[in-house]
Image (tube, rainbow, N blue to C red; front, top):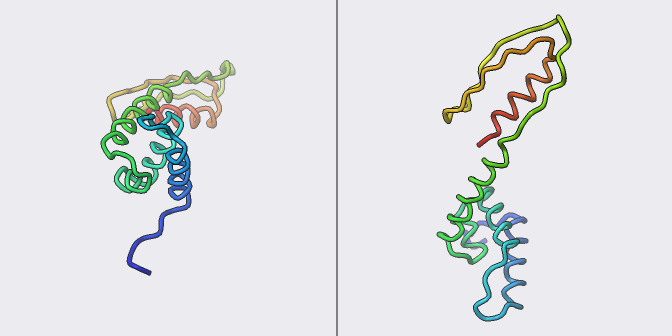
Amino acid sequence: MGGREELPRDLVEGRSRFRAWRSGRRLGERIPATLWAVAVRLARRHGLSRTATALSVDYYSLKERSAAAVGDRALQATAFVELPAPVLGGKHCRFELDDGAGATLRVHLQGYDTADLEILARRFGKAE
């Protein structure tokens, strides 16, 4: 071995997709959004520098698109979680969820199952 680290399979596949596109593109044609989405996904997994090098794309363009995708994910992750109607009587609790970024959710539940609490807490924590 020549001291170089072998690329993971998904990076090799991404590089192949970029090479195939480049071999058939017209001069001055921009990289399609679908390929940028592949690059952003790979950068999230393997880092910006390694991905930009493997795919032969501009580091700063990939960085901008990755940052924009993080913002889009945060908007998409904010979702309404509907809980079933409570059962009268039974369990009740009050708790507060804090996402560490300043958002706080105070909840008072009556008659809910523990699984419902877990789902609510996980969904709240995913708003990154």
